[in-house]
Image 1 (tube, rainbow, N blue to C red):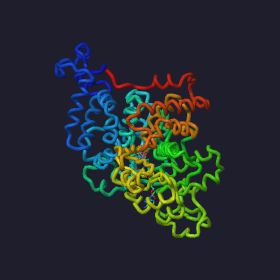
Image 2: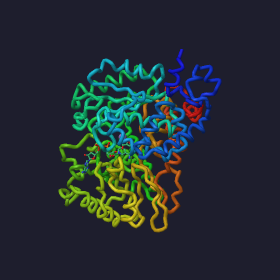
Image 3: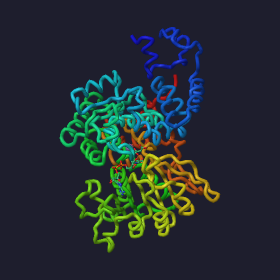
Image 4: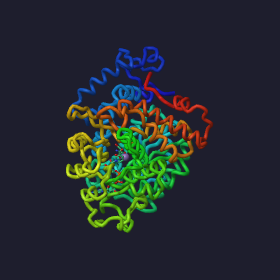
Amino acid sequence: MTTPIEILNNPFLNKGTGFTMEERKELGVAGLLPPRVQTLEEQEAATYAQYQSKPSDLEKRLFLMEIFNTNHTLFYYMFSQHVVEFMPIVYDPVIADTIENYSDLFVDPQNAVYLSIDNPEGMEEALKNAANGRDIKLIVVTDAEGILGIGDWGVNGVDIAVGKLMVYTAAAGVNPADVLPVVLDNGTNNKELLENPNYLGNRHERVRGEKYDKFVDDFVQAAEKTFPNLYLHWEDFARQNGAKILNKYKNDITTFNDDIQGTGIITLAAALGAMNITGEKLSDQTYLSFGAGSAGCGIAARIFDEMLQEGLSEDEAKSHIYLFDKQGVLFDDMDDLTPEQKPFARKRSEFENADQLTDLLTAVQTIKPSIMVGTSTVPGAFTKEIVQEMASHVERPIIFPLSNPTKLVEATAKDLLEWTDGKALVANGIPVDPIEYKGVTYNIGQANNALVYPGLGLGTIASTATVLNDEMISAAAHSLGGLVDASQPGAAVLPPVSQLTKFSEDVAIAVAQSAVDQGITKEKISDVKEAIEALKWEPKY
Ligand SMILES: NC(=O)c1ccc[n+]([C@@H]2O[C@H](COP(=O)([O-])OP(=O)(O)OC[C@H]3O[C@@H](n4cnc5c(N)ncnc54)[C@H](O)[C@@H]3O)[C@@H](O)[C@H]2O)c1
Ligand SMILES: O=C(O)C[C@H](O)C(=O)O
Ligand SMILES: [Mn+2]
């Protein structure tokens, strides 16, 4: 029997002043609350007013976390009323601030699971105890070695898993009772953390090699055994681990890497949105990725796959794609390429000036890209000179500076529009308000995987798909098309975040239908919309 105090202290059950008098008598909380009964709407209005009074974005986020920690329904109802305003606060970019300061700001574990490489035998018990009898359908797991573009944040990185799951619920209605945030604490190489007396994680450098691989595998086995209906979302692993882990498990369990696959989908959708505006074909484009890590290669792979679907051969498609990383343009004679970079590495013999292709300006002058995507973590890398060089070769340069958080973006949308006299088609990873330029209002798409991973997850879970495959991913990318009126001056390349809940549903339906059409579902699903509606959760008493 749950005691009155336990009810008030359980954010899944607590309604606070939202409990009716009858509920208060029945649950024994009558004298444990102020006498006034409030509706959810009244609670939201009062709480939102408190939120607005907070002096900074960080204070606003900390306040919202207090609401989340005490009353999930109120938190998500308030989120549903202020999606556009709350996304940059709950999620990117303000989440970066709370991650950097997590150990110093710590007040509540927020139902997260902290698995330690120093105590692998405790995994299954921790997962079971955190689930507390719930049938967990979605885990977001990170080892926090590649948080956004800010790098290694050790156990502090658990907050990215917490924040990503909040967006799953706010955007797609994934039930907060069905989810679990998990951090794999493998130590940290972040000196600032190791020297911080408040740091709450394992105080040693990251473990590499077999012991780490076994730690990850032990986690996968424990999670899959404990939660038989699990969709496992990998987030913010370092470049050398993300793809290796995904490739190891993606054909055997229902799993997804957001930085690789989620970003690939949303950036392809943005590129297709740009094609809608210019009327061109993707397979006629010249694509340059500045930064070829998890995200950069994930996007390139998605662009490549789409060019094949448009009828190009593999060699023809590869001839349109160029990767640029720390070495400059990537060539197949380099001995330090990652497995994900290799398929797109070029031949030096293609260029007279191959050895000069080590700076972005020379690369743009030589390659003449029509699409340039930044996933480099190098702020300001897309300079005015480089952008105007690109614009001198193409009518509508498509430029997506995607590095997060805001301080790392390769170029701002405002600069790109001014430098190209309004011709650039722009998307950023962070949210950007509409920009007025020469009498036109430019809407800037947010090419952030948060616009697609929630619907992708909801659709995959609702379909009971045994795996998440390329067909389902392609269906997700295409489901975002047609939502923007491309004929309008200043049209965005992606639908606005104000429509996030609407198009998350579109993504979910497309993904679930793809799984059903392929016959890869555990259960027989006769109506995907029904299956999705049955799974969705709404914040109401
Ligand atoms: N918008 C989105 O949805 C989204 C999704 C994923 C990642 N990102 C952002 O993209 C960035 C990279 O993320 P990731 O997960 O791919 O990290 P990563 O470490 O896997 O990749 C970064 C790549 O940039 C390269 N790089 C670093 N400095 C460079 C330089 N001076 N010149 C050229 N290349 C350079 C690195 O060598 C690496 O290959 C981060 O800022 C992240 O926040 C955005
Ligand atoms: O977290 C985000 O905002 C998007 C992406 O997953 C990233 O790592 O930047
Ligand atoms: Mn990420």
